[in-house]
Amino acid sequence: MQNTKFMTLGFASISLAIALLFSTNLFAENKVNQEDSEASRLEALAKFTKVISIVEQYNVDKVSIEELMDKALEGMMSNLDAHSSFLTQKDYKQLKVQTNGEFGGLGITVGIRDGALTVIAPLEGTPADKAGLKAGDIILKIKNKSTLNMTIDEAVAIMRGKVGTPIDLTIVREGEAKPLPIHIVRGVITIQSVYTKKIGDNIEYIRVTSFDKKVVDDVTKAIKTKAATTEGIILDLRNNPGGLLDQAVGLVDLFVDNGDIVSQKGRKEIDNKTYTASASETITHKPLVVLVNGGSASASEIVSGALQDHKRAVILGEKTFGKGSVQVILPITDKEAIKLTIARYYLPSGRTIQAVGVTPDIEVLPGEVKTHKNSFSIKEADLKKHLEEELQKVDGDTRENNTSNSEDKKDIITPENLTKDIQLKEAVDIIKALIILKG
Image (cartoon, rainbow, N blue to C red; front, side, top):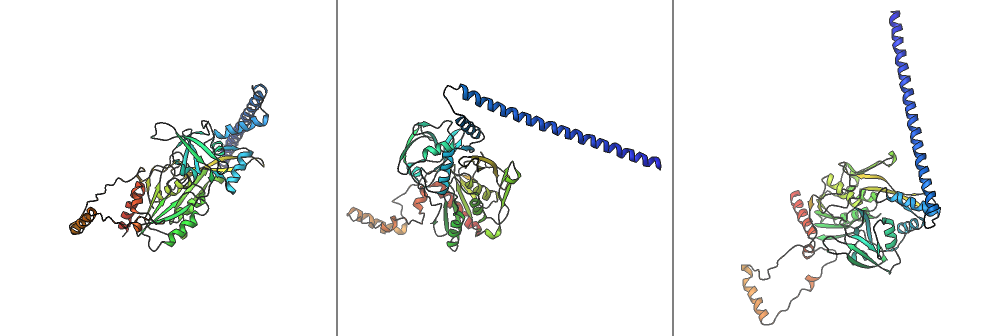
């Protein structure tokens, strides 16, 4: 019995010794790794300092250390991803102006796609929209200055300016044989983000041009105001470049009872968040069709993608832009800052938006509906009356009273309007079918 006791103690002592030895080795290994990592970091910083010193000393043009550091920071940030950047004193000031007040500009949202400065979307009613810029246009030159290797912030800084001043762009457009010159006069960018129209007797059309702080309130008001007569809703997010995340989440919540809407995942635990739907915020369960295209980005992709994953809406149009990353502005001095990508968005199914976009359930290219009107089409019941009208034409009596019919009401989309927008026409046909199925 005593031998057994000593044997047990012996085994325990050996186990403890092995555990201590393993822990010691692991601690030593971690310490070595930390030391190697720190040494590698110091070596990299020393290399950077050496290059700065050499350039400052031997470059053909004299460049101050401050300029070199700014250029180094600009290069580092722009090479991280298309949306990260170093904001100089001038850039940071312009960003504050854009966020807090009015400014003169063109009214376009731009991004980098395949290394080219690309129009994500022209904002409706702005100088860029009126001048004919389209989503997907590649901006080749701004004021005869090439945009190759130009950052988004640099391009925006050049395009922004005093209201009433002109600017010339050179663009490349798919389907065009050569670059197109676009002349635009800068204006004050003030945009109505939400407006509604009626289609027929029972369909409500809601257009959201960008996600500002009033989108959820405005859409809620629009839906509740026409709830009694509305049997189906068309939500148009075409050429909507995005905006505030909370408004995108809130808009989805108006249509979805429960479940995840979107999540963001970053390197740091604090940047990981999941936004969920609440039944108390949902205001309608009526059939829904969402229109998207290549100009639909960021918040628009969150809304359309989340509604698609929840099978709450039919998504129609073209594949979206594919901007699914989260940026924050981090001040580094009182006058300078960096814009850094800290996370990516993920839809309820777990799929990413970044560089992928949202593929619609039904793909429809833009264009007009081909129609053929037969002016001589008559029915048996109309035969006598029709022939009398033809005789009147021969006799010279061609009086017509089209005044009331030709005037399109501002808040109504007419059948004639639909023939000019095949995507919207398809959306109307689908919503009518969904209304019938719902009974």
